[in-house]
Length: 240
Image (tube, rainbow, N blue to C red):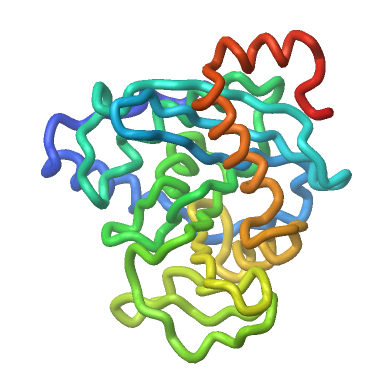
């Protein structure tokens, strides 16, 4: 089923109401054990430049990139920069990148927040509800909430991220002695399921490999332009 049109609100007040309405539709339950392919999403943007988003279709069984979709837009023409409302700037270009993939992913892994957001609707939750697919947010920095307990230095350690007496995510150590990541479910994924899904992903650096690939492809697309990327794609050497 085709998703509804993406809503771009006319003001921060209207945006806040849209977030609250969509947050009420978030489902924090679901089984991701059967997911064989999913999309990792990241974007690259510098001031006065177009934003380039990458959707990397990841083969979970073979642990490799299966396909890449790129799209670009000027985010200032979509929605102004306002902290807490970044999904209205970024989601349209992510949706365009996803549309370039040869098949729809079964789950979205997004560089950003899930429900760990002041109105419980970060970019991962926003995209998940809009497309009605499971989604997980993996952020490199803390936006909202407070760590509960001491996080061990060992790889794989995790402690709850809390807000107003409720768990909204996890503070997660992806590598020994590195700064943590912040994992939160977006939609159709349980709290524990979001953590376990990320824990089971391969990772040569701080970021899980699928997100690292999305980060690299978004940067490549911004630096080289989509024309250069399309030429590379047509030559069949995307993943060599």
